[in-house]
Amino acid sequence: MTLTDTTPQQEVVTGQLANGLTCDIPASSPLAKLLRSQRTWVGPSAKERLGILRRAESIAIVGASPNPSRSSYFVGTYLLQSSDYRVYFVNPNATEILGQKAYPDLQSLPEVPDIVDVFRKASDIPSVIDDALAIGAKTVWVQLGIWNQDAAVYGESKGLTVVMDRCIKVEHARFSGGLHLLGFDTGQISSRKKVL
Image (tube, rainbow, N blue to C red; front, side, top):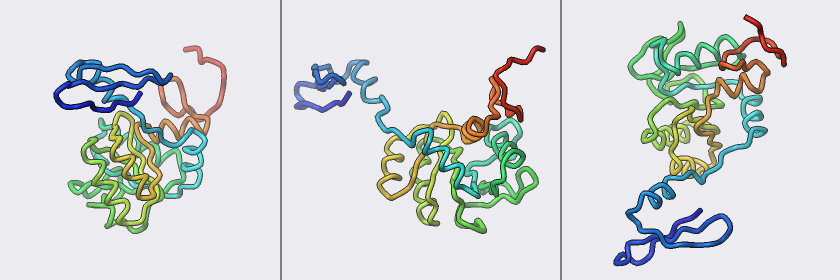
């Protein structure tokens, strides 16, 4: 559905449905607000995400945390233990994460990472994209639950591959055949349910 604003005195928006029909909706209505918030950007397909992960040799985790209860810590642990990636942690407030040196910013890394994995709030994504572009990174992967459609469109317009609202750990485990029902890498592929 697309929305186009009509004249200001009418205070309505025209909604266009997928079947081509249109209707006028009061601009202040909850439905108009909902339609404006709907996601229209579509990132790389599953096959393309698999290709990104297979080609990558290094990943920088921006917003990595030394706190074991944070999702970035869990993802970092998984990547270090279950992949061959060179993993870099980016956090200006930490000196070490998971026994590895933490870097204050992307510019301080010893190499340009193949993937910049982002654990930052949605409003921070444009600046991370600018930082990734500044160092010549090719892919920005924004973690599960984080969505900034304008930033994704902007990144793509600058030549970046952008993956958004997807967990790199879940995707890696899924593509490598190790994703368990609870999201943990079991190390084996099986169609049988384990009996406890």
